Image (cartoon, rainbow, N blue to C red; front, side, top):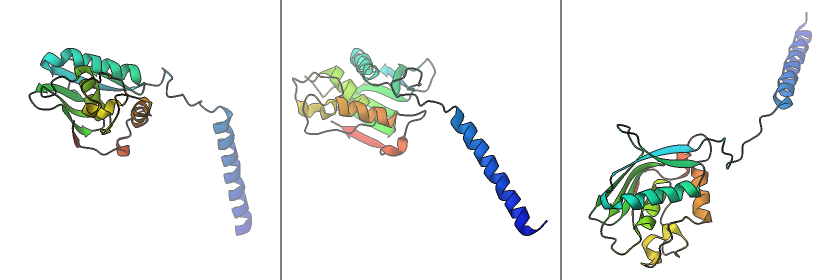
Length: 188
């Protein structure tokens, strides 16, 4: 068999194999599940609010806000003995969050924020852990405007852009940690 004949036979075999593979792959493509499809599993982040003291109710309400607002991530209490993604503690400083990576960090429910809505504070600080930066100055309609919205602002809900950003950060089976900076301290 000449080199030319062997090369033609090899090329014909490769083309036939590719044709079969392509036909098989396109015969029954798996449909892409939309982001709001309940069958698509949300990324579960656990939290430990054991140190939140008098802010426990506000923390629970802030968690509920996020669980109502987005589908790609779910916040759930850590089981006894389980290491939590998010620790929430009360202290005497200003409210702040230390995000160590997307979905991980510490929320400080600071007592210095006298007069501000504590549910809004909890949802705002959890927003930092979920990847959102401060938006200052900002209107009350923006959760991430924080204290710049004023004492009278009690809106604990993220706006459409804030929800979309969190959905984007947690789209897919794992969080896209490369889309936002890692360790950051946010003070309000």
